[in-house]
Length: 85
Image (cartoon, rainbow, N blue to C red; front, top):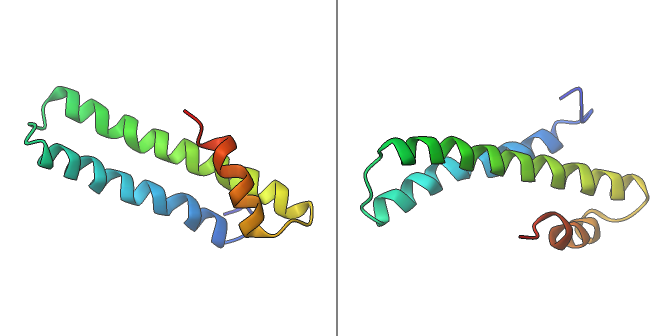
């Protein structure tokens, strides 16, 4: 909270992380794949990547918002930049 000086930005980082874990488990379940060593290693990696992308996107949008740009415009500009392959 101290890093962002707000309660809204940490929530925007927590939300993708909170949906990554059930999404990864649902993908394993839909493929009927066992939760073996590869799945157990893949889930924390998935959660870590979701956290990293969410933090970078929040920082990008925050920087653009401080430069007097609206939040939706900053998010639209940041999505292709931060979510590239």
